[in-house]
Length: 105
Image (tube, rainbow, N blue to C red; front, side, top):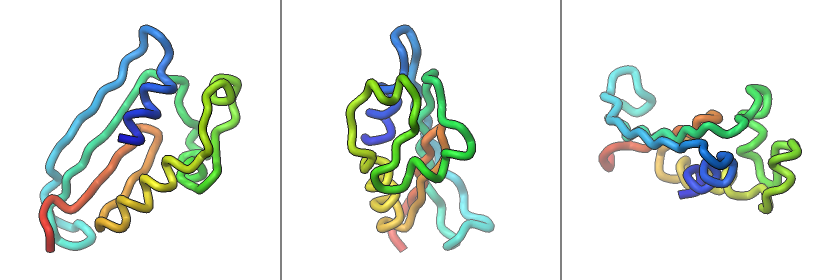
């Protein structure tokens, strides 16, 4: 929900948001299990490559004039990443990509 709400929040009027999902088959994966990968993309102004990791840290926000007009604490993506990791997954990028084990161990 959080990456989707960010995509909607930071996409200007007449922009669009897309969600894709796929099963990534095991093979060289970290734990040898199939993974569910969900990606949320939007036509917003984007996040600079050097800020991709920073936006997942608690209380961090990208400092742009558009972002400053939006409200928030800077905790949403940090909590999203932590929850993904607790479930054996990960989240990354400015096209927010969440990957979780497709089945329990």
